[in-house]
Length: 463
Image (tube, rainbow, N blue to C red; front, side, top):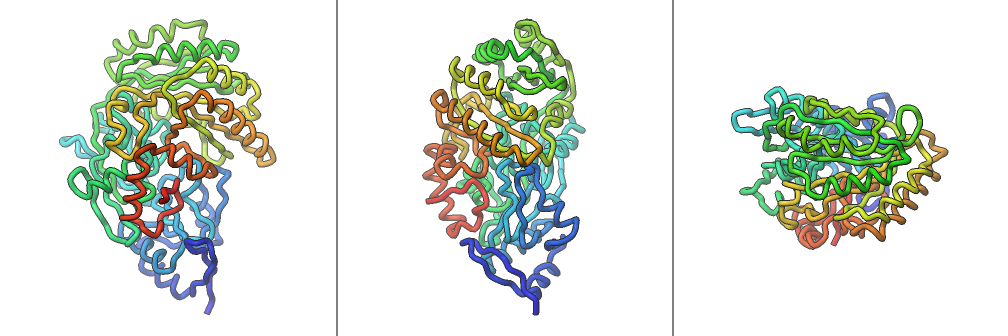
């Protein structure tokens, strides 16, 4: 009888008989992939090309029953388990080495209820797919800034997006969720069912199980005023200081992002990207100071569909590139921080990298810091170093540059961080920084719902 070597939750190795694996496979509606073959290699690949891990098996789940069977099989054999939704998270925790990867990407249903202004969606759905269904009815909810991001991972960590200042993060629009716990039980979590679990799912959900269905509140969203203004890199410091003042008291309808990147001609530029969700005429008035500032070399701001806005930045973040991130949340952008960003940008080793400052205010900041697991509602700006490159021999140089810029920024940051921005090697203290005083409650709930830390392939909450 042949055997397969697998990795346990403690990191040790054990063997399973192929007959045991075959019985597990026979009970699935979806496929069980094992090493070898194009389907396995495609399934283990995620957005970040730096992630090159090889699970012992991949359960391509067709529905909640497959998820339950997978969790129970992993639990029975003490296997290391990872969970893949859209596979876009930079840390790559969706893929484990030698364990069981529970792949939710085949689960793609989206069911819109236009009368109730709600939608229920499966965990394999990407935001572009979700938006296509909801926008058929002129509806949307906050969900990312790249359309290829999965709804599951983004939502469970908080859920930034172009509608955040008007309607809050994705978690602020989450009405309920169905979740498979570490025991293999299906629970429903909402404001009235399993309220403590629902609290934890909204910002730390990766730690508590496998969500198999998300129910969202929708909002009426028609054409938006979106696009970007672009300035030469020589004016980057001036533009970022203007951006800081411009975002001091913006209306809820406006969500913005400023950054430094390499333009199509190979030259560094500074840019501000905007999305105004409201009356277009009012948007023109609000954005007029930005469009008048300095001597822009490009201005693409115009009325567009929300789905077009959601895909605006897709080309800058294609799958397969090598990615390494660092980020910090802060309540202010100092002159010293701007100086560091501009100085390091001039020495950026890869022309594919982007430095970004995202601004969130309005509805996002009106939620209490302890009302959901996501804590940092008082911090308006997310400063992200999005380093990406294509040649593996350049990894040390790009990673070193990212870490150096991050360290240069720290005296001017608060220490807070958005958990979905965390990369794979940042440690437990950074996870604690993501949750602030909410971390202690999360530790208690982790002990209640996952006492053995079965779900550990995540930004892990520990006692």
